[in-house]
Image (cartoon, rainbow, N blue to C red; front, top):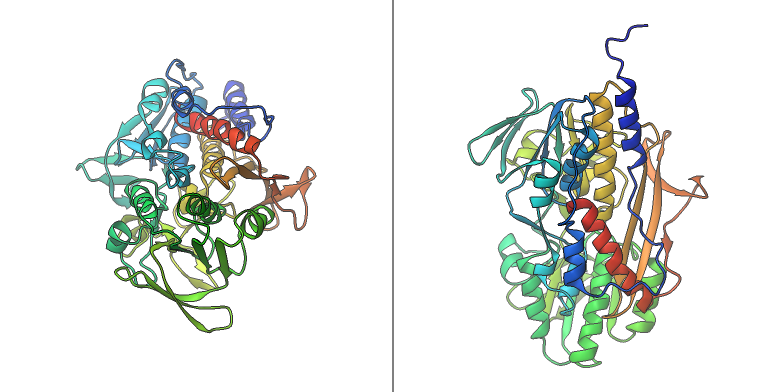
Length: 474
């Protein structure tokens, strides 16, 4: 037997332990009595200030660079060190000092949350796990030389690279990036635009019109736009009059997630306030006058005089625009309707290795892998990818049957919420992750929704959120 590349029993045990931990986050198993309404205390707990960890010496070695400090990138960096041990060198490249969670950011619009309460730093992954955090931007990627050029003038060499850049927002509907920043915020990246949209919503006249758009899927957080419509409707009818309107222009033919919950919310809880219009096209928005024009399902031209316009534009992997580093490296290689569209990065879902470049792995919203683009999913993808890389470093193949869990809560009013969860398994026939049911792959399986919209779900939402953020950032 040739043992030259055979990993030791200890390595194999460590790698097996990593595999078993891939989907560890407990999600929807709380009772309606769970209550974690103190955001400050929970946020402090989620950062894990009083816990330290000592990565084991597994015998594995390698230089791993992770680009992007969002949900996917920071989780991958943390678990590579936690599972891989002291010989695995991990550098996290991120230009910002903190990450602001997009999850829960819709609650900023009705003053239930603040943007600052959604901010998470990188001190824990640095001090507790030994991740080197480098505050810089990627200037260029040389996949042949396995090196990155950074904005601070330095160069990083890698054995394996994880790319988790998130998304960019495309110019759309006659709007530019300047319009998004100053006049018609999409607020689909939590931060200043969220604050701007909150201010505009607060200033809307009594019985005013709020118009929002939803791009064709895929986009970040499938239930998110419908959740936003509900929260804005709840705010308007409470503070601005029951004749207020939230007009939802959806480029998709139907609601994309939590169909039962949102159909009920639109038609019953927020009846008369939410005006949902699916299958629209040719949307045009005047950033100055707030006039919105579009074609309805029958092709007729419609015009709306809005008071606040919230366009959620189509998205693509960050860095995919012509001349940017991701595009220059050829990683944005997705195809739509049989033609290259260059929006997403296609990966092998067993390891998240790019199909366009060896030793480069893409996770999170930028990846095209069959999973929803969402924060909890990004956490799951990061663990599958980290486990696969550690197996590769140990001379093994990636797990041939990965499992991922997708879960999220959706606030419907200021005090009630719904939820959605699904388990995804690898389908060796299609080589994609698909929704599983009854313990295995089942045709036409679908995600599970909450049985009702309730206050108990709203309380549980805070527990879920703090558990998830603690797992990624603590």
